[in-house]
Amino acid sequence: MTFNLATIRIKNLRLRTYIGINEDEVLNKQDVVVNVKIDYDAEKATSSDDMNDALNYKTITKAIIRLVEDNRFSLLEKLTADILAIAADHSSVRYAEVEVDKPHALRFSDSVSLMLSCNKPG
Image (cartoon, rainbow, N blue to C red):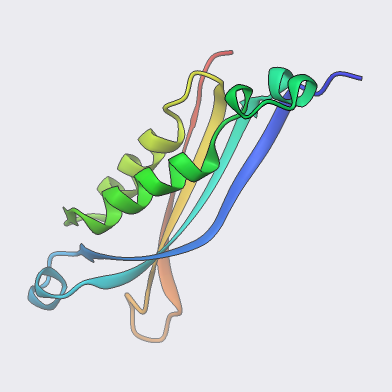
């Protein structure tokens, strides 16, 4: 049996960053919650059981953490797009999707989120 497409999900990665345009948002870090879905060609990894043939989700997560925590963003769109670029970077990735939640961004709302995705030819 051959397995080709694998899905990695990074769920509810809770980070803090500067996000927004209001004075309070510019001066104070806020919580964001990141969810990532990555579909990739795992044929080599499923047959070899070798880490070098797999997509390393730990490396991807560390890059996302560095990006989010070490930068400032005015727009949720820019933050989400930059995370998506990291998620989709590896050559074996066929599809990537990122959703970033900004908790308590609106009164009477749990959060506001933005989702972006990309398809890569394979």
